[in-house]
Image 1 (cartoon, rainbow, N blue to C red):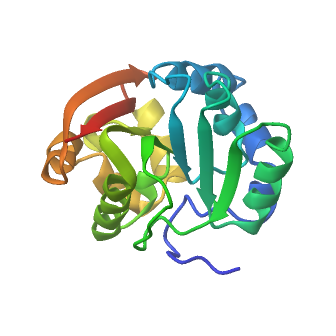
Image 2 (cartoon, helix red, strand yellow):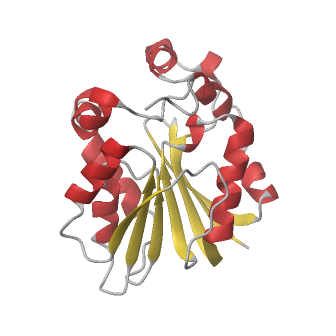
Length: 216
């Protein structure tokens, strides 16, 4: 399966996709599970929430979010990778009210029901900027009024001012789209798309941020 965006680092395939969770654990020196659990805790999930998980991957995040729901809550995972779809369905097979949909986030789509929250974890930075705009429009259109967009991704910072110990790994690992992502004012961008009442939480020396935004 060829990449839709050859320069993107978020379209994970092959061996990396099959062992994604293990690779993330090893690369983070075991910190990733605790980190992602702490970010999900900041989402403000309510027991009856319907949550859209865009770029849902293996289902690790879905499982964490599901712990905050009761029988009336629901999660829909969206992804385009057959390998991730297989892992997601396997890892979430015991979870009631969890479904998967093979769906591109970068083309217009409409779901059967509006959602309370939409979650993206290190997905948005991996697209060209004009494509990010379509993704945000898709989320806005599929959220309830007052629904919350949750973007876990890199924060805004200057790569040139980043300490060399962080800068060199960032430049070596990240795709080219990430370099312009970190330079943009995402609260302003989301504001032009109809979002407001922003809330921010930071990790890893403020280079990683969970940005929450409410649909007007």
